[in-house]
Amino acid sequence: PDGVAPTSPLAWTLTGPAAAEIPDDLTGASYSVDLPAGESLVSVLREAQGTPHELAFSVAAGEVREVVLELPALLTPVTFEARLDTADGPLITEPVLWSVSELSDAPGNPLDIELPAGAYTVDAYWTAEELSQSAQVSILGTDPRTVVVVFPTPLPAARVIAPDTAVA
View (cartoon, rainbow, N blue to C red):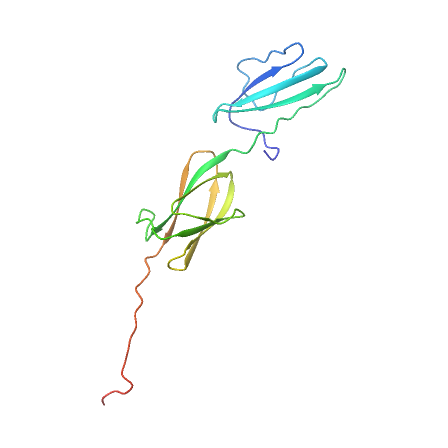
């Protein structure tokens, strides 16, 4: 994705005229092979995620050609939680509205989504208390992670009433 070569192991298969052999141990992001003219199909298995991808292409006689198989961005499972007072405090039970950078707002607590690698600003809005908190989050790799936003316990509303006049 975005022109970046994958770093996880890839298993390649190439079919077509003369059925070019690819060594079993070829797991890198690219390889070169001479092909005769005709239609071919390149397949790659992203081994760590178990996701297959393929691309059909043709080669004309005498043509030197580079074939690029764009792989989709890897997604990381992320759970967002809003808690009271500390990162391991009680989960807020009233609705929380989450905004994650340019993504659409989503309600839930916890909220489970998948994000590609990158840096994000996360805003949590606790609707019952009309309070918000923000956090900066960097997503690297594909291991599931939990992001906790901590809200202070709201103080009860207080009212002081005094008489119009005071005794001297």
